[in-house]
Length: 381
Length: 252
Image (cartoon, rainbow over all chains, first blue to last red; front, side, top):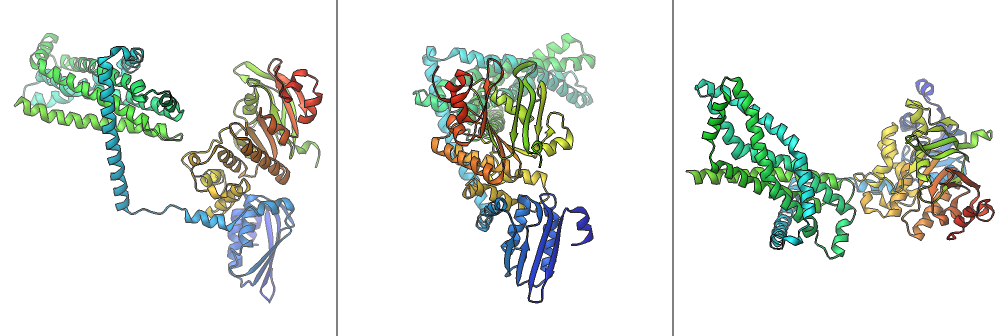
């Protein structure tokens, strides 16, 4: 054994060969998790240099031999270091022999067969498309089911669990006001700052107020409120329903003859539909309030700023923003509930459905907003 | 080897609880190498709390836990890490990582704490899976395993670093009698064949009479050990009437 290995490793060996091709390996010391990696490498390189017809391993003088050491002995005993040679292993106590018998080349080969292979990208595209189509079908079915049940609840309002609606209203609405205020206030401020400079070049800085009013009421108010609803409350809906699915609470509902959509989803969707316009109104005001200090700082009196906002805003702008917000609220609540109900099995499933709920909600909000922008532009012409 | 060196787990004047509220007070016991030791008690008697303190998840209010003679309570840094590697833990549900296959779960400690080659790690992990009778399930995800299989995989992961002590939290909970008996047989085999010391928390009497060499029965009223000894002996000879009733499955 080389000197450096002797210094760092508590395992020692003596490898002797005879002219008839027999190699005798005497192992002493401790063949454990710490010493095995280096010993494995050294022995492999030493035995590779020899032409061995048979290998005799004497392990009886080992003070300690844990699973790592046994893995090395097993590998040598199946001829892993001396291909074609006959290998005999001697000296292991009954306890270690019992452990050695649990090592198996068949298990190892079976594991290698199962190692993941790289898939062809066409397969991936096909699978992704198929899964997307399946998901789309589920969404359409779900929207149909939710719409039917919501209409049923509107026709028979006593059947609605209003207590649950108000609970969701409080959690997703009232509790969200501070963060919605802060965010839209700051967005209003940023828009005012960013638009003030280019408008100053045209001598039209006062129109920052008009711009702010229009942007907040038509676009940013509803979109910001919906994104906050998706991130804060939609994710909570998905996690709540997902956990209920993992805990088999949804199965319990079904076996009691109750529809999970009627029992859990409708309340959240109704709360989302009622809540989104309220949050949007709030976001609009907070955004305007964020722009006012900037305009005051630019030297415009408050009365002038307010009158400019009043002049620039029409009822149609407000109605556009609020009607969009109702659609966004419906999207966020229903998509989040759908993702929650689609939760799979295992501890990661709830996390995955929560992420999917936020991503799908935001994507659909932007798609719906783009469609709405195109439609309203053509209507205004 | 001295008698002291054979003691693998020791609770010394151990008072455990949450914050300053003691659940069990001044607990003392010793577990010897190769012994299967059970902590028994009714629901709410503090079995799981005691186990969580024995494995170092919580700091005790007072007293010490010794693993192979070294204090777990006072150990820090590398010393604590070395001590933690001396024992394995099987949690009630197996606590397998859902994103990893069974063999990857078992391999995880080897990946994190050794310099072994990939092949050596696979060989060791597969050998442990074969020991617990799960070699054919190596590439399956935990979600595809039954409750009993998940517990076996949990044992395979717990013994992959060759610990001298294995702590089991309710190993038979939620298992059918046949699977439970198979698990008991595995515990016996690992204790007798490999000399692993077992400390198990359970209220499954069938399992205790089948595998345990010695038990302690916890009394929630006095917050102390009510009785200690071989289970069959305690069933007939325990001083307290309620302990005999408990071990005889008699309704009070």
